[in-house]
Every structure is written in structure tokens, then in C-alpha cells.
Length: 82
Length: 270
Image (cartoon, rainbow over all chains, first blue to last red; front, side, top):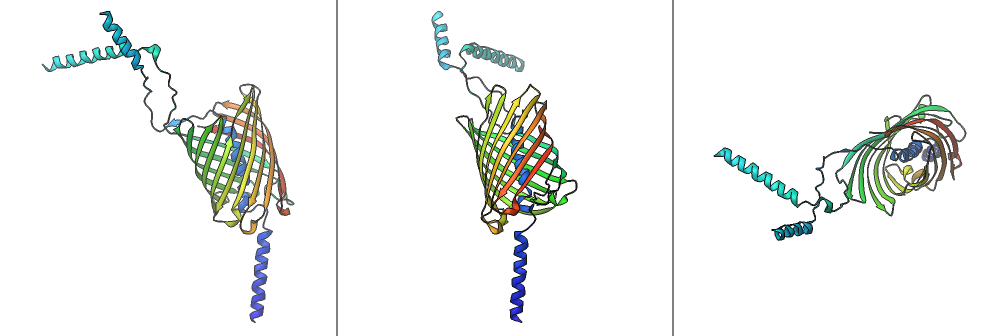
């Protein structure tokens, strides 16, 4: 009895493994392969589009950087002209 | 009294402004390289009805069918430094077949990418949390964590743009059979005919090394090439009609297949 149970169990395990090994070529693991390939090709094409970018925070316009040395110079020249 | 104070304040403000304006020497403004560091968002994607000669990736039972594939991403892009940018993204994609419903599949991804510009090359590291579904978001087949390193660059010569990309990915997954290394090498080629029309092509090589479960020691290589005509509808929308040939070799004979695909693809960015 015990031997027949072990034999049946082994047979079931063998059948399950055989089915898993010879599963339909398009199984879950590779279903997404074509989409991955398309995604990479898409990325190359989309990168060539002009992508509008919507800022989350609107930045204030940049302030000009002043040359402080010239400011001092101009002050001095004004002083000397007096 | 109050009125005179207001007038005094206003007058002094005007004088002060005038003094500042006089101190600005516009010819000596220092040139500063300015890069916006504020994050921006965008929506990009594609829509494509396609005919495939082998819907189920089968070696012996080749079944042709039409399928529809939308692919939409929401991106948040920003910069950490002038040459270091980041992207956080969510992406959804599915394939819905007209007859071969066993081929229906969907993917949802959430990820982040860090890209460094170095000597004109874009070097990036990406993490992607990914959900693969059987059917169109019907049954969750497995969940993965993809870690990718990539290097890419654009080269332009006259009216030709070449975009090579090399990348290496390892997939950690709750399904042992899905764990694997993947290497990709592709070359985006675009030959601009005029401002609206271009010829495009993408030779593409993929190699897979499966590491666990029933797929342990399985090795696949997929070779594909596309050739198409692209029409720029607007600066942010283009339509490309492609013909693609792909073939898979594997050390598991059952996994060999070849396929032809043809169809238009609308790419958009908003």
C-alpha cells in the first residue's frame, strides 16, 4: 500500500515537472518581453520629441550678478569728479 | 502728517531705486551658466495597432493576429546638479490581442533613475518595481525588482542621428523562473529627409541568462531589426510605420521562434 502511494506521488510529481518544463512557449515569464523591447525602442523615439515640461514650482526669474569691483570704481570716479 | 510720510517714503524709494540702477553697469554683467533645478512633470507614451505573425512566441504553432498596445508614462524630472539628473516614473503598458487572448499581457512599473552626464555620455542607474500580469491587468503573475545600469549617447552627422544604448539588468523576483540577467545593445538610427519625414531603424540584440527555478541555466538571445518611416505631426507628436523582424535562439530548443511585425505607432509627449 505504502509503495503504491509513493509510486503514485512520484508519478504525479514527474508529470507536473514535465508539464512545467514543456509549458507553452509564451508563459508568464516571457509575456512581457515584447513590451520591454517596444518600451526601449519607444524611449529612443520619444527622446527625439520635444517633451513639454511642466514645472511643479514656478521659479523666480534669475537675478543678474553685479560686478562689485566696477561698482566701487564708478563710485570713486564720481567722487573724484566732484 | 500721515500723507507727508507716505510721500517721503515713496520719494526715498524712487531715489534709492535710481541709485541702484545707476550703479548697474550692464556691460559688465557676469555671464552665469543657469540650469533650472526645479522638478518638472510630463506625460509621454505611444499607441500602436500591430500585426504579428507569431502572437504566442511559438516555434511550431505560429499564429498571426492583430494586437493593440498603449504605453503611457508619467515622469517627474529634476536636477541635483547641472550634470546630474533624476527621474521618478510610473509606466503602464498592455498588449490586447483580437483573437489570441492567451497572449494578452500587461505591465505596471514604478521606478527611479539617476543620470550623470560624463564627456557627452549619459550614464544611468535605474531601479524599477514591476508588476507583470496575465491578461490586461487581470491576474498578477509575478512581481519584480529590476536594477539596471546603462550608457547612452546621441551622435549627429548632417541629417543622421545615431543613438547607441548599452544596458545590463538583473531582475529580482518573487517567481524563481523570472530571475535573470539581461543585456541589451541597440542602435537608434534616424535619417532626416526633411523637417517632417525621416527614415528610422533600430537594430537590437538582447541576451538573457536565467538564474533560478525551472529556467536555471537557460540562455536566450533575441535579435531584431526595425525599419520605418516617421512623420513628425508636431514637435511633440510623431507617427512611425514600422516593419520588425525578430528571432530568438535559446539553449532550450522549444524556445526558438521568429516573428514579423508590422504596424503604425503614434508617439506623443505632453
